[in-house]
Length: 193
Image 1 (cartoon, rainbow, N blue to C red):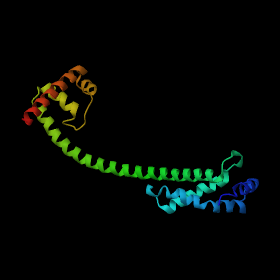
Image 2: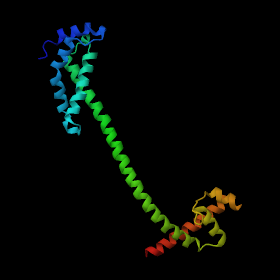
Image 3: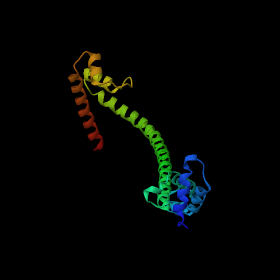
Image 4: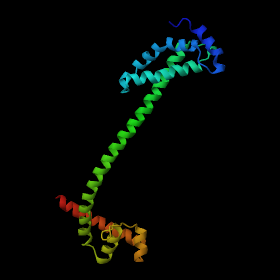
């Protein structure tokens, strides 16, 4: 089937300059169509439709016919098989990337929604626990903790912001925060027992 390659290819190389598809080129492509089927069968387990693989492989065959150079001492069938395979692989990569991105997006959306619901529940419970713990602190430290963790306003502030707002040092805010954290830890240990 592939024995007449050299003759046909040399004809179609001379007609390349005109940019028109020649009868020889058409025959060469038709003669190598079974190669497209052969390569497409290798990728039937990829999840893509067999007809799509044939279509994409045919594009690879046409590209092979368009770019083949006889002076490279490679048989057309070898070159065409590589072009067909490359075209199919590019198609599969492109489609798999789209599916993966869509799957990841759906999973992230579901996870984000679920996480937001749980976060809201936990935040309310935690907010109440934080308020309870803060109420056991001396007045000044309680005020620092309320501002730092947004227990009154719902807006958390950095140590620096709290320090500036209250006219105290950042280390004072940090000290109150450490004391509060230790108190929380003690309360949690008590609840666990």
